[in-house]
Image (tube, one colour):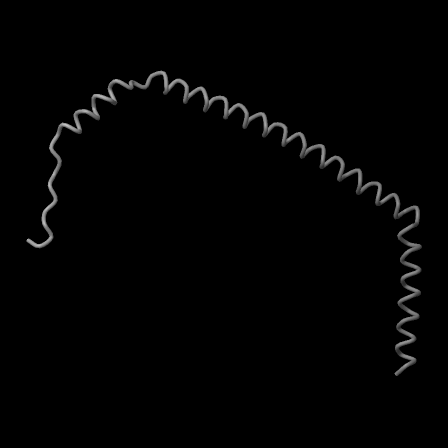
Length: 100
């Protein structure tokens, strides 16, 4: 039983050392460089898309502010005050007693 554990440990160490050699080889470094280059291209693309999105959001915000300013200019405060006075003058409905 002890020999089996020692053998597994020895094999793990051997594979670990060979794995390190494999990961630090020239071919592996080329693969890492190509993967990193792809990530950098993707990052640039995402940044471009975010910039376009921010510009569109700014345009929408400015348009919404302009719409609100236009509505505020066209809003007739006197008409609102008169309609409030009319509603106050009208007799309201009386609630029916719940006992009846």
